[in-house]
Image 1: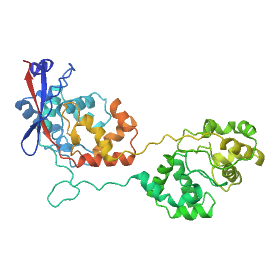
Image 2: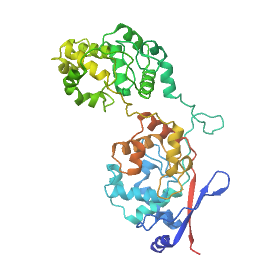
Image 3: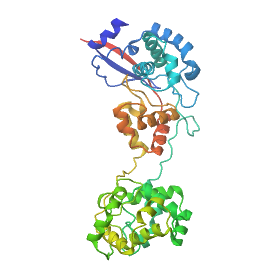
Length: 411
């Protein structure tokens, strides 16, 4: 094995993807620079694989099964996984770089030679079958496409246009703009009307008939609209309002542009509505302890001046992106993990036919920083919970392809 490992510096790896019908040759993968023994498991002999099976029988099969196809929730399939990747991860568990005590305990007394061989064994197995959603002949069927949430939000918000404007920018005094808010705030405000924490009979009736799904879509639709100042006039002393509003910026942002998606921006809001809302917090018609304390010392004149000041400020788009479709996420993931999650890099894991619950767990670990990878962190931190679930389910449905890596000597 030492001799084989040293050959890596002088050779290139060719990937052969084994498809259901015949064999197809993938593009040659460039040999990596020297990186310790990362590729030893890729170069394993049949004898190494046989010895790796014995290691698996004593240390791995209770969770991962002897065929490498897990039947335990949130325990990954290992069958046909890329050998170099498996070896890297087993070493990381042994070194305590991955915080999962059962795995750390399972490998802490195994030699590196044993880790190489058991990695080669699991990599040599037939891949797991994909998750089948529905089929008469056993073939995986694609999930129906989900409706575009922005279009769905626009449709759900159609009845709002009569009061709030078709684009969510009010032209009627006393009626608020709906643009410029983070989705979290919009949903919270609508739920407050629904449960009575905000008193408004018309809004309570409307909110009661909106499903949680439609509410989320409406919030996204309005968050993505171009914000503008309300098309109404404001009475009050703007200069005095600016001085009186200094205590508001800590929560609502400089010039009324909030950086917190759960706290409303005030910039460009209709002044009459803003003044009425502030008084509602003061008299308890709206219940919010922080706002009640903040408005306790305001008189009507100061309140009107503050509203006039914020009404003249320029609103800005909240930091909200349009969600990617599952196909768009998969296109990004495939750049590293191979077409349909079938990696042709021995050090990058295959995703095809992996357990969806394991993929969810792994993505969430990257999102929170529990697993460290700059590339995966950058990819996953912007994913919503729903996107994590959808992408994980997508890869669980893909057909997995086994690979063989051949070492060709330099000419």
